[in-house]
Each structure stands twice: as structure tokens, then as C-alpha cells.
Length: 246
Image (tube, rainbow, N blue to C red; front, side):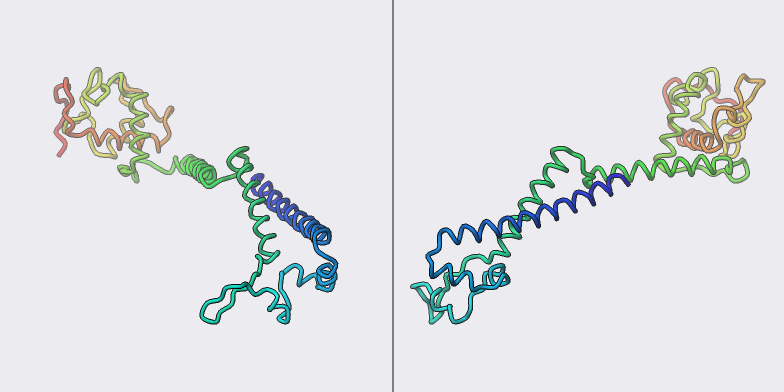
């Protein structure tokens, strides 16, 4: 919101400055012409309306005075300078370009496309996190499903590395706890089984209930990640334990 007001203020300032520059330029141009033109030309200039001065238009009866010496196929070129209004517009674009360059690329106060994109991504990410927190508790053993999105699996990998490596190994090969990469499971190897085991723990085997540390979404993410370890056959894998899961 702050950036929006700042940019509106900047554009308004540029427009006002441009109008001021336009007025000053017209006045200076008019004064310079009065100093350099001969008396007859001065009288002619004085007879022109402000619109004629602004547009640089010459009366048709003056066209003969503008003809240049060369012509081609009966077409005569006129010595008509660039209209003042066009030059004023050109000056304004130069001024705008200088201010834009300084504001956005030198001072870097402006919200350029790259910065705007990063801001929008950050806002979307925050909204997603709020959504996940709000609906985290809606996941349970009855409706849990394996996640396949790269972001969720990455989150699951991070959770596994932080909490599970000590017992199950960095590649799921097993250690104090069982091997998670084969098809043999002590407490079941489906998504619902994993969710239940991680949520409630196995106290008699020394595995704590993680529902006091992780929310249901996080348990769903780490469970989904564990399923991706199936068949990876890491070196030093622990011998099979439990029942084969088909």
C-alpha cells in the first residue's frame, strides 16, 4: 500500500514538473525569438495565436516562403521545423526517463517488476502457511492421503532429517529403529498406518508420540516422504522386520 501511494505521488510530481518545464520552455523560447528575430518577423510572431505558436502551424499563404530549393517529380520540400508541441513532449519524456532511472534503478525505492513479483510470492507463501495452519487439524487417519507435491516432500524430508535420522538412519536404512526402505513393516506400511504410528508413537519400543511436536499436516508430509524411500536399497540397510506389505 505504501509503495502504491509513493508511486502515485511520484507520477503526479513528474506530471506537474513536466507542465512547469513546458511553460518555462515556451516562455524562454518566446523571449529568445523576440531577441533574435528582425522587427518584421517579430510583428509576424506577435500576430500568431497561442495555438499556432504551440503547434508550429503556418498559414497556407505563407507556404511559398517555406519552400526549399530542390524538388522531385513536382514535389517541393518545405523547410518546416519540428513542431514545438512535439519537442515539448520529447523534453517531457527525457525528464520522465531521468526521474524513473533514478527512482527505480539508482535509489531503488520503486517497486519494479522483479521486486513486485518477490513481494507477491512472499504474500502468497504467507497466505498458504496461514491456510495450512488453519486446516492442519482437519487431517486425520480416516482422510489422510499421500502427498506428491515437491514442496510437501521437501518439507517431509526436512522433518525426517530433524527428527527421525537418529533412529532410522539418514537414508531410512534403519538403526535403533527398523529399516523403512524395504517391504516389511512391523506396524503396517500404508499411508494410514504410517500416520497412525507417527502420531501415537510406539511407547513400548521407545518411539514417542509425535502429535505433541508435529501438527497433522507435518505428520502427513513426513509419512509421504517415507513412502518415497521404498525400494531405494541404501547401503548398510537393516535386516527385514515385521510382515511383508504387498
